[in-house]
Length: 61
Image (cartoon, rainbow, N blue to C red; front, side, top):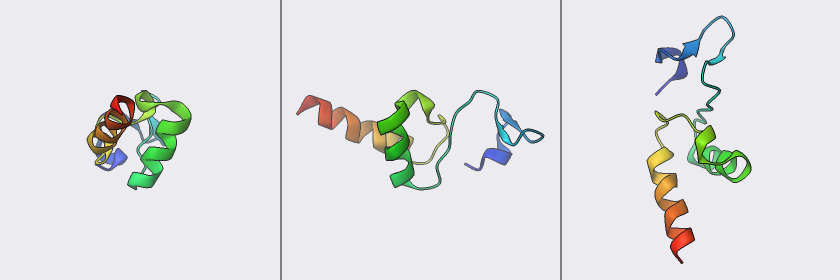
């Protein structure tokens, strides 16, 4: 999802009102999760669910 289409996006400040990030690529999502954790990722990000699955698999192993 594009941030500009979201009701939580502040066009004037050009950022999410909740402070979430929405990287356009899966690799960007993985990097953000490594640094800030899963809570920093927008719940509407296209790769969020996939990265959650990868993270859970690594924890279980």
